[in-house]
Length: 319
Ligand code: CP
Image (cartoon, rainbow, N blue to C red; front, top):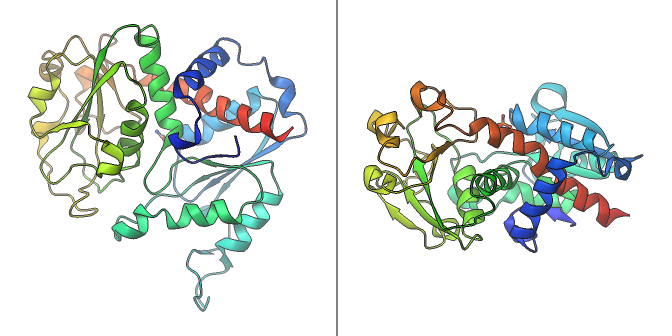
């Protein structure tokens, strides 16, 4: 594997999930492979899970890591080309080229600006990073996608369904939030779920919040949350800003919050969220604190093995 930008870089999603779950059972089986190898983790935006789970994954493979929080620890980076750099100190081109000489795999997080839809949709920044890097690149969340999260999510669903033994209904439900958030988790989740034929997938969101067709990929989308919840086996909650009125918050209606009453409409569904989550805004305490419903910690744990399987496949392709 030479890059991990999206699900399209994966040959077979089922095989990848199987390999990741095997690795979870024996996390140190490939500890030798990372000897004298370094993984660089570059963050243009904050993180808790992605940062630490990638470090733990690298440790399990015997790799060294370095981490750069660009805005706190480095020069001010110029992201645009051709500018007179009176106010920025180093161009992305030199920064990525240099950092990629200090590691064997470069993993990068860079969020969308949520101001210019075309700019974000074209993944201008991440494509530059792919172009400037001299080593394989891993997407730790870009303008439109968060594939490491989605791999952990589908692994979690696989564990709770004995590897998709029978058909299940998965619902991606929009939920309220106070800030304008990216579409990357929802886009990516939709992409990955669509690769698993045993899953019936429904998206529910307010009007003017439909995801881009490129990602929702023909999934049934309804603006009636209660209807979507009927017979659901998994409820994946996530906020995203409007795609049509790009980056805008058009709805703050707390009626969309995930509550125990709504979970009772489902087929004893499990509650999923990528975290961090705002309690009693996105989901009420009664759902998040219930071991009957919530599997968010299982998801977070799987972030380790999702990263580890991707790093492993990249390290194998280096040698
Ligand atoms: N879910 C997720 O990516 O968490 P962090 O933003 O904390 O990395």
